[in-house]
Amino acid sequence: MTNMSKDEQVGYHKGALESLVKERQELYRLITIVDQLIKLHAEALQKLGVKLTKDEEELEKKL
Image 1: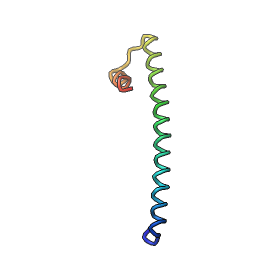
Image 2: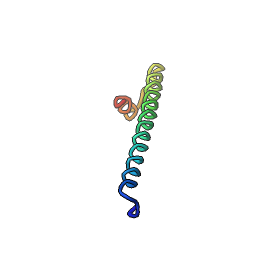
Image 3: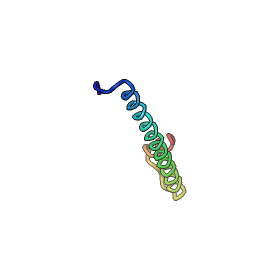
Image 4: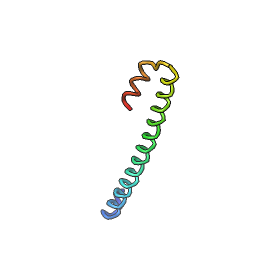
């Protein structure tokens, strides 16, 4: 990278940041979907009378 001009280096780093921000947004979207599914399954189990373990209850509280 030392052979690149300053403008090329700036462009490279800006492109990398744009890509990483988009990746982070997509990861957040996926995590949100997974959290919603976890909550729905936990609620369904509780309605069926299944007692959640302590770890599962703590996970649900975090959501």
